[in-house]
Image 1: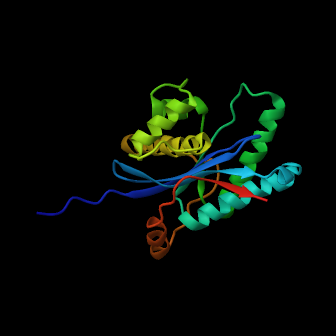
Image 2: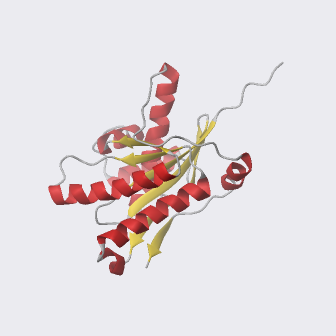
Image 3: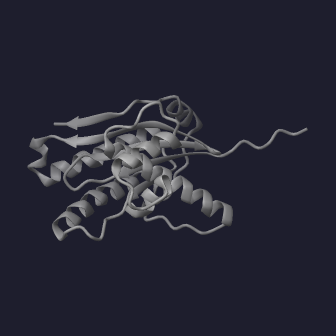
Length: 208
């Protein structure tokens, strides 16, 4: 009797970009129906860096690059811009998303974008879920012992989960998917195996 084929392992980097507050990030690994959070947290830019828009964006770019290099994600999922935002906030958020896309492109990682309501609906069941509800559902879906903190990190994990669920549906029904940018590059088996053993608790990164 032949053994059943092993489920494909996929790793997603979720990003919750912020115009003013911390940018959330989360790495989720899935193998079949089993999902786990490998690493998550939020980048809190120091007040000194906030004074320079370029320096703040550089901090986000450095963060994304370091996460890609450390965890070798198969794809990056990012929250899209909420249409109801005012022009100033929307432009600032677009700048942050821009450096996220740049970092992904530089490392040949595909990027997929999801609307806030779509993300909430995928993890909490409806698009108007509040942050606490999202945190609780993320904890349940990823079988975590504690609610992920801060909420920015939980939102990033939710973005990654949204992509995994959407990708599963697309794979099942053979629907074509077009990423925003990037092309997945092949990762070495040894690098993937080494990264898979790393599981880091929530944290808030602070760059000065």
